[in-house]
Image 1 (spheres, rainbow, N blue to C red):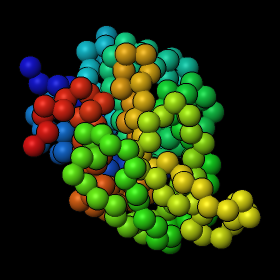
Image 2: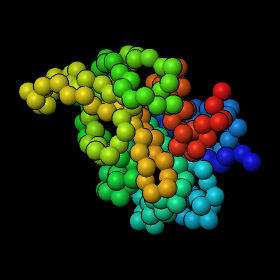
Image 3: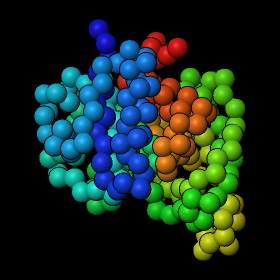
Length: 223
């Protein structure tokens, strides 16, 4: 039986949510998933549908979610549905919802240099998601995240590259990619993906596709 995924996109247009949603829709369909794509958070109101999903992929930045919508997603993940996403589409989705942030494992707080920063993504954790992959460079926003210490970090970047008020503190290794458990559910996140072209980079897309498969307990679907 095919795995089932729900992609919900919207929010701030600057992150090209529709384009990113299409990239993930194709990637999941290519691995045998049944994929539903929605552009309304009301898709999170159907608790029975969520309970039958293997994966939820939020692609929604700087929005407002109701307690019922958010609670239904959290309960689905607690009961075993995976959740995975990138950049602001998952960890800057709902700034006023600490429950969402607790589930996803982090929240964006800054990106000095904006979209003109060049930095290296260093793979640090041994895991199936990053197996056989190498460090790579990105020219895009470098996210500074507040993160859950329970996260298992799979990739980092040296922060800060751009000068800013954090610079006097010296360099820190900022998580880029992580996984965690939330109840019975698996959580995957990657901070890359300011625009669709970054998500489509071969190194990013491979890591993220594997991350989504892992979140859905679908490693066997990988090509």
